[in-house]
Image (cartoon, rainbow, N blue to C red; front, side, top):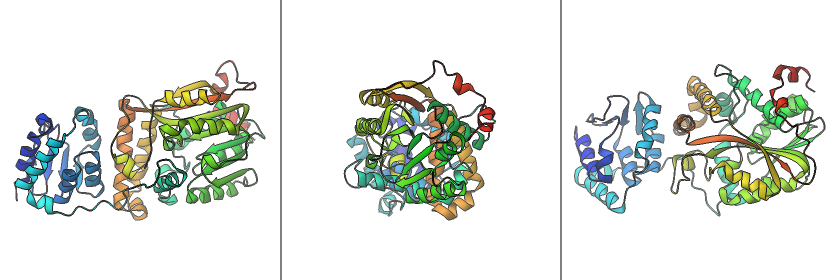
Length: 432
């Protein structure tokens, strides 16, 4: 088969999707050295083995590409972002049943070895079972993502251990500066005051609660479904002498029963809730929030793209059962639950800056990451971070902070946003 793979692939691609897939913007190189030349010489997508092509033949979609990438059978020489940036060119390409049959027949005729290759599903691929967004399935899905390794997340996220979009004053800010600024921004939007009771839904490693307790004097409760997260969050609280003021629980937000809270925050969690569950999510928050209390939801939303209908790379390898929806959906759910929407801010430009710093951390610490999580997961995370940065920059997705107040009492929000512009150093100097 030496030197024959590229001509066979060119012929097969020319027979499907009206020949659009045969006109590639980049070059393909196959394991036998043959080239399928694209419009540009670089970057080069390298198909390293027949197993990679077997994945693509059996699942000629995003899932097949993901499996080929995660196993190392597919690689990119040059700029990975340049390859990902071409995805919109093929966004409206779909393979009919006839296309799939012709593709398989062409492979059987010209590349029989590929079809005989065993291409096992990567070990890290998620396959959740049970009713979607049930308590049991959500626990399994969330833990697939967060129970990877606390040490891995330390090297990826840096000392702040904050796994959400940071807030930059300038592109030159360090990640730690921008994450502290984000924490302070949230605390100011919530108008936190000493002694208030704050609930953090999806508290992660406790970074926001630490900031709120140290600098705003609150008493806090944080909930997570990840036991390793909770253990590390409790350790960090003990180190700061805050164990008597902040409690970390391993439970679902639907299992909290000791409201009311003065303020509630949810950062990077509602993406796990599911569109069909947004109403219940908002009603649960409202039931736990005192009248006049404030709720801030920080999460990713879809802009131009539609909710995928099939298996995706993100769904199988990063966030099982994760769903993104327009920001109007969470606003409508909040309004219906009796939480008046008071402020909405887009942080879209801040997320690529955050992601590129995470990517830099991963590149610097790649040998340690490989030891901690293995090659398959490291490859999945690298692709996830780069693809996410491209999606934010292209305006496919964004991230919003939506602030609301529960009806029934005075929310006591000021007339202007002047309190948000107060000098950060001044607040830190006068912190509790």
